[in-house]
Length: 317
Image 1 (cartoon, rainbow, N blue to C red):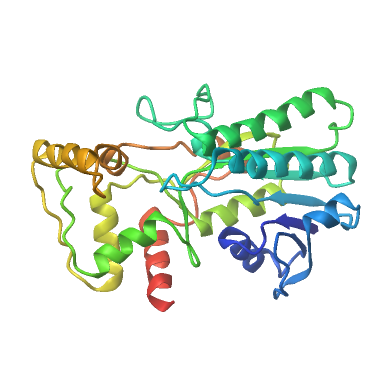
Image 2 (cartoon, rainbow, N blue to C red):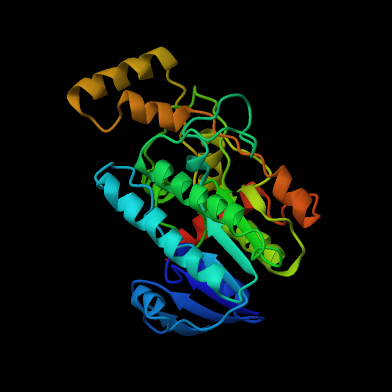
């Protein structure tokens, strides 16, 4: 297939190139355009507006403004990029001969906090903050266009993917920050909190993408994650095992740590009540719908094995 990938030079895009270049012809659409092995050519967003993009069979839309955990980005930037660029590339898709469109949204478009035990596609979206809100606006634009272009969409497939935290070689984000703390041998003081979180190994994500490109899967919204959810304590143990270190996890009382966090909120310290909530909350995502759609019983990579591969890539880099 001829495939156009937006944001092709990012972490996920680079991994997709590695996974897809052997069997497909790849083109990029990005704000930067260096040469990349496995990519025929990378175009700019100006090329899109000027009608210079090639005809392709599928479009994978990754480009977007990542979630700023420090809350320093202006809200409008998220809507300009996450919503605005999605509108542009989806309009191009509707007018093109491409048969498949894969949009990378986020679980944060569905929920900032999981109510109940597990997050499924049936949840009524309730994003909090400009990142999730801009992603749900992009989803709504796509769905509205589908409703108004019924005839044109008869031969096309559109997939809205909501992955939870993606990790793998080249990853940059909260997982790297935690890795840096663990690598220095700093004890983890929140061992008394037994939360469960879902992650997405880049290997499992590549498997999903290959399935959506080659199998007859119904259009729709799909949550993406590994089969197993892990606690932060388990995550630290996996990191230490991959590094050949002993895990240092302190089970300080929850009340004591909550008091420290309240003090941190008053004094503007790194550990505050909001950050403690984020570090210790449950966020488990169901991947049952996408597995059923692809006709698989389980993801090819176990959650712990995927995390070990990621940590080993951190060490190698």
